[in-house]
Length: 302
Image 1: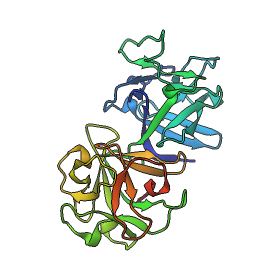
Image 2: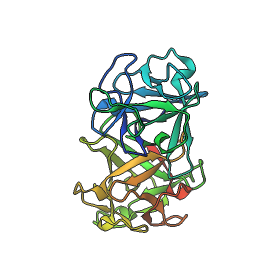
Image 3: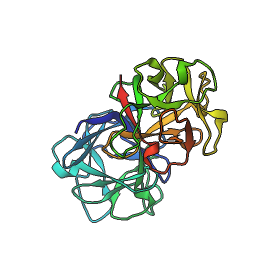
Image 4: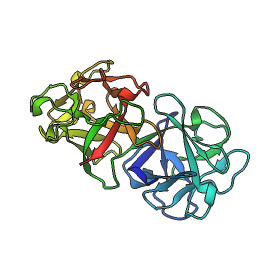
């Protein structure tokens, strides 16, 4: 399989730190986890193969590898594509909120953060190296965040298609600005494909924070917004003039690994874009992430 939506960040569910190659482009460089920044060394491509997933650094082009498999605490490095199974990984859903385990095909051990493990020491930059472990705890749980469809930075124009039927989207039901209105505060809806710009959206990446996007209506120029910056489930999702507040910022998170489906997560509330009912003209709200199909979307480039 080809790259899925291009670039990703891989974020620890335990401490919020991200996979990082420390800006290095050399073979055998240790992989670390460190606080989220804006550098390319924290960006990854996922290449889906028949026997597993290759995780490639956007900074170096080298692949995530476990070259020295052992019973526990195996280090993780970047390598060229010459180590067969040591370069391949399985992305395994935990069944909770889109979180996954990333397990090496060769050693069957999971990628683990190490900053909270006894006896582990930080590197020269103060960040901690990544290890593999056979343990089964929160240290091996990750969130894989889509940075944008395709490998082109900046922005992309898409339709957002509802995926109500598992991995098979119901053809034609799209995120829509009712009547192509330019009104602030208008709640967006689900609607049959009508071929207009009312159903086209521009994904604009925040130039200062990788992974954060504004979702802008092509027809109105306004952006997707959680009404009133609400933290509540059921709060309406509306269009509004851009004001650069967190209730207008979103993450695109893989919903079902390998499927191409994403969940759209509010930076403000950590809740997800949700269909209030499975029907045309259904309004959109935010709610807690359940993993149900009414929270899954397919990004169709236009």
